[in-house]
Length: 457
Image 1 (cartoon, rainbow, N blue to C red):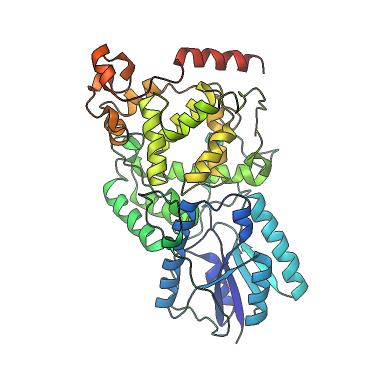
Image 2: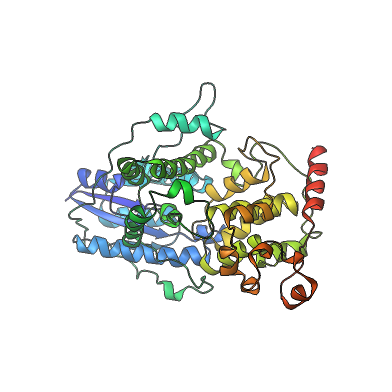
């Protein structure tokens, strides 16, 4: 019996899984392997919300494999050591995995390749598993990546995607390979109360339900904070319980402006992956515009803490930050608003905000989290780096009745619509009865400080 190992990483699904399909073609038996690598925790990325969601994903993946006659083999320890041990136990001659783009993913692949080469075992890293179009597959003349989204989107849209594959009918796993008990969500402490369910089954159900009810209107309503009509698929894309290739394929087959807008958002994800693949340092360093004049964290410490806790005095900002803490997720428009407020109104380093998001976001990763923060902060790929989002104007535009604000800021539940985004304008007697903080900073003062500091760069 020939054996191959499939190392699952950010691709925790059975549908449209090229590494699994290739391993089954190459061998009689396959070891589906997931390694709980302590290096993830040591680097600070093993946050409770993602750990709980991961437990759901692994349990669902194991269930799907058992329905096909197999099982998921879970091991704990350094990834290279555990993969080598499974190779030795199974007699595997090949290891298949999805190619990643982060610095950690590159180091993992290089270390695995070196170890396996020494054992006479081949490592196959497959593209277009975590993204629809592989990073580096689309490049402009004279550069290794696109630094601006729109020209990337034009080229990306012309790419012919590989056909999405079906899930396997059967998976044969050698009995001699030992595994550990799967981690459970219940053992994870500090999880957001309304954290969504993880796993491929939940992800596919969510997509199919939203495709019927929300895809058609996505272009018109994806910024509507009150309606909350975004797909909420980002956690499933992060953990790979859904295939981006399949999502693009199904959306295009559906057609219409809503589907086109949704595909554009999937392209944004690929865009960020190709940026970080070419410039791994952008995970922690300014990508384009170097900026060293942020306020010191000791100087802005109280304001940063108020921002984290959702008590800035700006209702839409506070609503978003409270949603993040309660759900481990935040509406995309709200992410832009709170990031702009921290970096351009409070004038705090984007890394402070990115770190807080990684502490709580179930979809938090180095690619989209860091590069979206840089885009808003003006150090990344935004072609208008000096744009500032006014939380009052944005709140009135995307939450005109204050529905989103009232959902998350109950102190303002009984405030009239015309005051819900500016409670400081309430008549004095009414304002005294509302237990809600005054604004941390005047927006005009914050804008003047931002323009003055940027003028010196």
